[in-house]
Length: 285
Image (cartoon, rainbow, N blue to C red; front, side):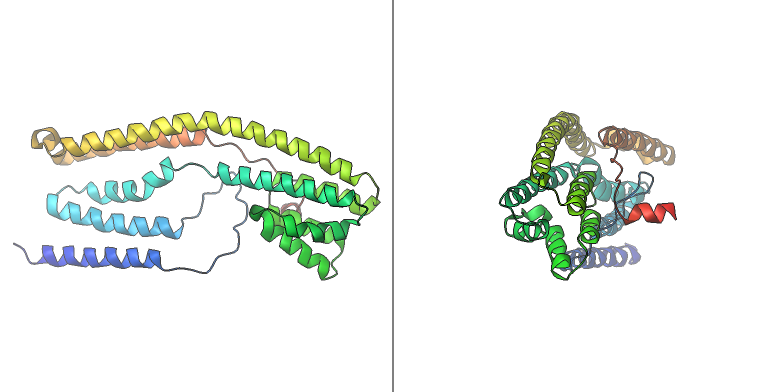
């Protein structure tokens, strides 16, 4: 046996273990990423980079041992890409944040009905703030305690929430901070009702979108299992062992991945544009 092959295989195994260990190392939390525009690609996370490195190592090892050069492309794409393609979207987190905003608005409205000022009501609401938006409300309360102007603190609060519903809440609070009227609690109660209806509608939409995603996962798992069993039969995979066969196999797999991408794009909703925040000033300048 050529001594280069086991040496390269050992190096790949060691590299894979190092990459796996790198992925397990805890890291300090990063600040929330800015809201992506519709034309920007998402950033690659550390978990995806680790899976990609492991997939490259396994793909090169499979290519060396079997002679299937296409494994250098297929294995990394499968290891790093399939979890992203088949993963559920972040709609659950968005719904949890919307429900948290709804609960927080009701809490602020309840405090305002007791005759408390707006700033004191916002500070008092921190004790009952739900966890999904507690960091944002904590920063708002910290700015108010640091003697920030109420309107500037609310605009920064809208940037922290980075959500159209958060802009709607901040805009109503801004109007209350300017006019100092007695009807702000009723306005916030009506706003909470509209957010409740929005959450209910989004839940129904996501339940309908979850059905085709579940079918795609099931079909993918069945296809992988069938291909794994058939790969043990030399007669079935023999036509794909030639260079032309590997090109055809790559085209077929690319078509399947393209269908998954199409399905994921169809189930993704377009982000609603915001109307308050520093990003509007940056785009205007």
